[in-house]
Amino acid sequence: MPTFHTCLRGLLILTLHLHAIPPGTGAAARDDDDTLMPGQAFTVGNKLVSSNDKFALGFFQPSAGNMSKPSSSTSPAGWYLGIWFNKIPLFTPVWVANRERPILEPYLSATQLQISVDGNLLVIVSNNATTTQTQSVVIWSTHIAKANNTAMVWLWQSFDYPTNALLPHAKIGWNKVTGLNRVGISWKSQIDPGLGSFHVGLETNATTRNNVTIRRRIYPYKTYWWWSPDTAGGMKIPALRALLHMNPQTSGLVVPEYVDDSEEEYYMYTSPDESSSTLFSIDTNGQVKMNVWSHANQSWYSIYVQPVDPCSPYATCGPFTVCTGSSDPPCECMESFSRTSPQDWDLGDRTGGCSRNTPLDCSANTGGSSSTDVFHPIARVTCENQTHDVQCAACLVSETGARSTLHYAHCTALTSVTSRSAQPRGAAPNS
Image 1 (cartoon, rainbow, N blue to C red):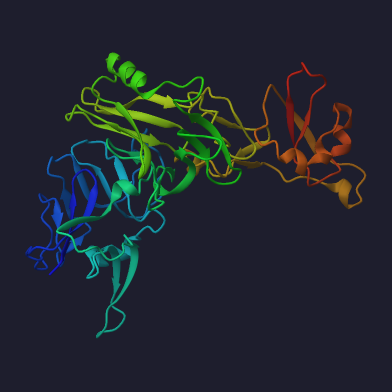
Image 2 (image 1 turned 45 degrees about the vertical axis):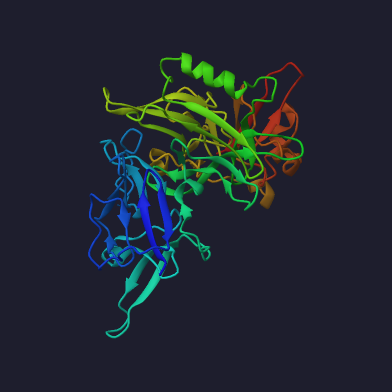
């Protein structure tokens, strides 16, 4: 009879065996084991540990100190099924299952990971609705189809569904047969692993080939960084591999690979030094980083960052902000504006940007003779989203026309350039 089981080998693998394997007896999975059998209980507090002792699978609650400086926030976070580095003292998740469906505290004791009769991995929450019947809600599932009758087959692996991080041998790219596209998506914040604003992936179409791109995945959409070995500024993979080998910081740690065959096209990297811990990630600011664990300093450090300028990720600071690049975070509110949610900013989520300290007057639009609103000039700035020029055509006036523009309450900013060589200027009105 077919027997399903799941094991942890740096990645989570669900396999099907058609030869006899003793099923679980209902006892909890052992913390020193790397395999979960059907019928075994796996709840909050249990964990699987990979055979090399390097990774662990279990339920966790994100901390604001993950791979970053600690935050003063005390906001409670939900619980998630994930994989993390087992021996690194700074808790660092590398994969999360239920990104968009956190498990809340009241339901923790009723939550478990299990293998269903059809071979799927499930995270379920059981609810004793009545004394005679128990109802279960599926929080997350692998959603696999029925397996073929072979001696052993890998049904599903976590490497095919990355979150914000890639380990050695994980792929960025797509399967030409199944259409599966492996992309990395940033967390929403340091304590929320939900789908964030930024995406890194492989882009191949009629006009571009083997481009690694980073783009903003929510409105306003834009690709703001790309790299390809075929472009004029690119470097062929063998040359890049040789360069990384010559660098003491990367030798033995990062070996890039590119594969394009009849079944797949992807990039990945390997780490020949098994004693090292490396992690390629896309952070909440929209930058990709190659991180290496320092045993001496007991911290992560980045040996590669792109884009280098923290202001390059599109709309990284949110509305009514200016990205200066000179602080951490590299963002400031415009004059007469304040952070919409200081707590979210502390956690790396600036999608709310800044808000006005006082509402717009707009009295001229309602029959008043004048408005108390004024424009605050901002010198030497670049407006990111040029599509707003079409929506606010009435705002594009000369310097002398700024006062008349205040009559349009819907118009929140204007730009003016006195000549082709002049520095661009922008302004936002407020009282």
